[in-house]
Image 1: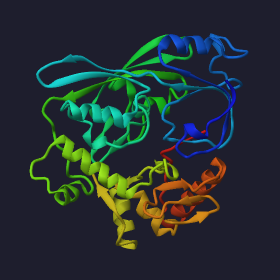
Image 2: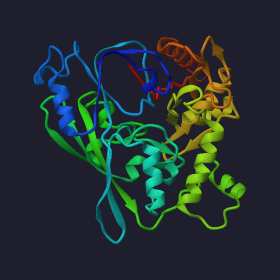
Image 3: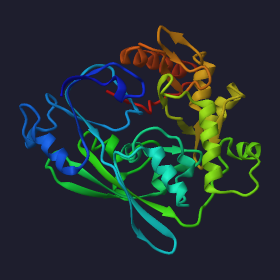
Length: 342
């Protein structure tokens, strides 16, 4: 299909247009689509003049303009238990599966490890790219391996945990291999016996409100869902991509200095660095609840930029630039965007 609006395929609801658009539900369909790129051949599939962009759930992107290339929507599904031993279950999941539906699938079978990652929007294939994380758990803790198609030579390559170079909301697929690989499936190592993570954020408080007397992965999942629903806007009701900025880390001595200047600053000290709460920094600069036209900063969570209706991707990007500058000027801290800019 040609000249297709991507408004319904990104959670910001940005009305950008793809020059070419197609879906694939297996590796064979993908190979046919790549071979059919107009004016292209396998050796030039990644050329700047004819880019290939893979779209999953569209929940972590900001489209700042039209895409003059081929946009492929990954719809590879399937959840299969491929191996199990006394401690772990190894589950292979198609990259096009919805992440939260996969979490629910695990909960129904008492497979532990992803309950803290409930209600995160997006697809399974996007999860390792971003090394998604929430409430004390990161994807890398349950990751085993993945298969991805190399656009440079058409071969499928296996990536282990070490191969992915996971960091805080980072992976090799966002850096050295950005735009080169199409993730086909991800295999997770889940726990037979749960290891509960309730120390982060308001999980314990929420569990108390729920009257939970005995911990379970279902109870933790429900607590996370309730917390996220209360704090974060529903993309189905207001366009957004969740947290727009990463929480920055600074040396501990720098945090002590900032704390002397700003006693209320929120930070989480570790060994040599302290992770700051980006939302607090942004709020202190006066952005929480700010709106200009249809682009704005959410009223309940300053980390979230929103599209109130018909904002363009450029308007939201420009607002993010102003926020970055103001935080840098006030605190001397440089924020990074968590959302991918296209």
